[in-house]
Amino acid sequence: MRLRPFSLFAIALFLSHSVTIAQVSGPNYAWISVKPEVVRCDTVAAGSNGHSSFVVFNKGEVPLQIHAIKTAHGGLVASCNKALISPGDSMTVGLRYDTNRLGPLNTSVTIESNAANTPTLFVRVMGFVKQ
Image 1 (cartoon, rainbow, N blue to C red):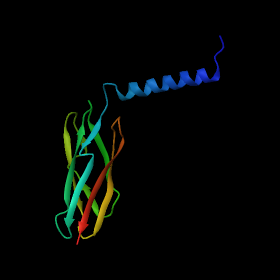
Image 2: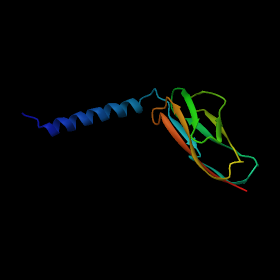
Image 3: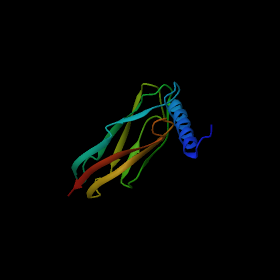
């Protein structure tokens, strides 16, 4: 029996996809999720309290290690109190933004971790600072 090139490609694609699924859905993985997925800071007055937060959950079976939390906007600072989240546990990430910068706030926070589902996760942050 002679296999055609397309058949070999289809078999290779199926086998590689099966291995990927097995690696992600195996018993030893960290699984990241956040709530809310989009942080809405609403409209705030200039010079007022520019604080907000979101929660990071580990829904996996091994500790979730946070390698880095970065902001894409110079006026936004993210802070957290731990770099390791136990299975089933959560952590709050605090956000502080500069309310002396007038106008829209439309940026993101990047979380880099050992999560099997999303090793690099982007959390959108939106708001508006008015005069």
